[in-house]
Image 1 (tube, rainbow, N blue to C red):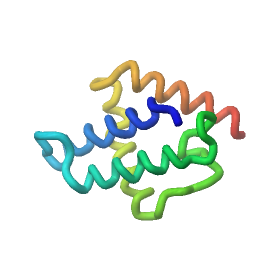
Image 2: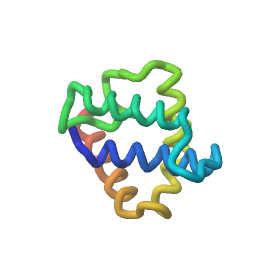
Image 3: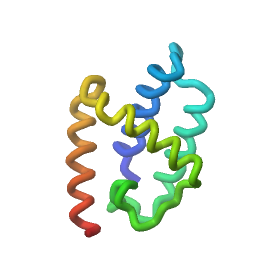
Length: 104
């Protein structure tokens, strides 16, 4: 599994939690549960290293409530990644577009 995907999701959750939950030391318990769930799903992804972005994946492995939570986090944190982690944000965009072409 790609460690960069795990790092990216952890960073997005941290950005979201700091802003929305006013977390000052790490992330809150609810966000920690979401992070653990997302990392578990990344580890168990059947596509392994050739994993597409979740948005275009043909298999939806998240439970509906967790899927909505991660969407909310990504919608908020995605645009802000460029200010906090510019290189990671650019790589995330590039990899999402590249993997999108493979699965069309």
